Image (tube, rainbow, N blue to C red; front, side):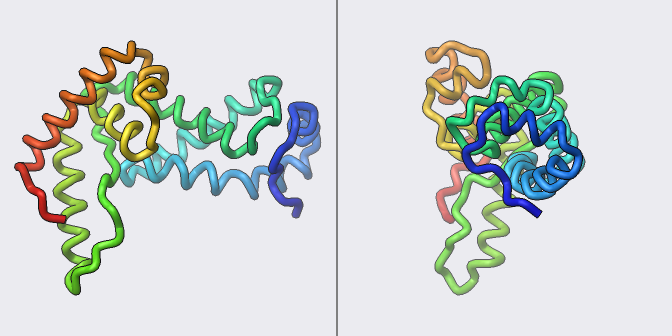
Length: 183
């Protein structure tokens, strides 16, 4: 099996897509990385992560001419996947109850495993109470580390509207979390 392309160009990606054997090797090496990226952002919904991964590959293959080789192909595909996730949140609005942990996995107390799980559950519950647009903006800003400008671009809003959305999201999270500061 060949390793996934690190810095391939559009012609190389097109050649891989045309060759069934090379495509299978590339897919087998690339798919788990794209899936893990999306699964971490789907709040434990494996079916959603699988669906978004499939959509990401279809979109990447369909628009392979847009890949210019300036980045790793997996990075490009994860950006496509992130856009698919944004689309999913937009389509499902309030019905979508996806969330992700916003806390560190590194707690140093002796009771760390159960305390971390308890805190994670409280964070997930608080996040689930937020409107989907606020939840998505908070995830992009604080989990993915995107700037306000990048979040605004990803969700299709102005920077001012995004700043306001983030402020409402943080306030809503504080209320839903119950003012807890222990972690």
